[in-house]
Image (cartoon, rainbow, N blue to C red; front, side):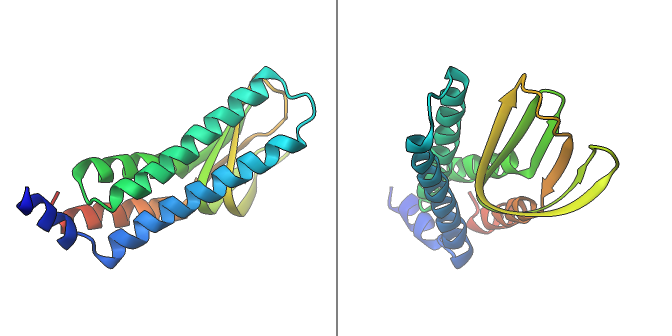
Length: 162
C-alpha cells in the first residue's frame, strides 16, 4: 500500500497536475455553460433534453478524469486518453453532427457547403450532437490541442510508469 501511494505522489509531476487541472476546468466550464443554458430554453423538445444530458455526462466525465489523474493511476490515464480522443474530431454531414470540447479547441477544418473552405477554429467548452436535423452543416475539423494533450498524456503516463 505504501509503495503504491509513494509512486502516486512521485508521479504527480507538473505535467500531470496541469493535465488534471485542465480536464477539471474544461469539464466545470462546460457543465456551467450547459446549466446556464437550461433556463433560456423555451419548451425544449425531448431530443434537446437528451442532448443536454449527454453534454452533462461528457463534461462530468472530464471532471472525473481530472480528479482521477491526481491519483496517477493507469485507469486515470486511460480515462483521460479516452476523454481527449472524444475531442479530436468534430464533423457534420447530412443530418448528423458531433462536436465535443471540454476546455479549449484549437482546430483546423474544412467546410463543404458550396466549396471547400478551410477554417481555423477556436472555442471554449462546446458541445453539439444532432441526428436527423437538416442544418445543412457539412464540415470536418480536427482539434489540434486535443492531439497535443493526447501526446502529453502518453508521455506523462510513461514517466509515471503506470
